[in-house]
Length: 60
Image (cartoon, rainbow, N blue to C red; front, side, top):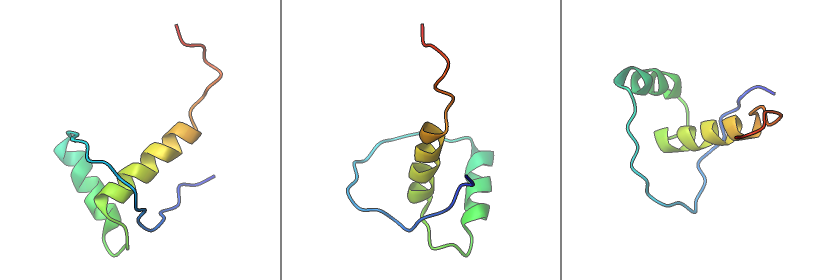
């Protein structure tokens, strides 16, 4: 399934995270003219990654 942007969610907690500048620029460009915040995009991207990880690999 393709990644689809959703509108902002509510219940949150603050975390500090560092992003490479070029990644921030790419995300900002993607979000132009979208009704999605940077934080919402990061949350959705993380959820998508977790849901679509290859879980068949055993962890050590």
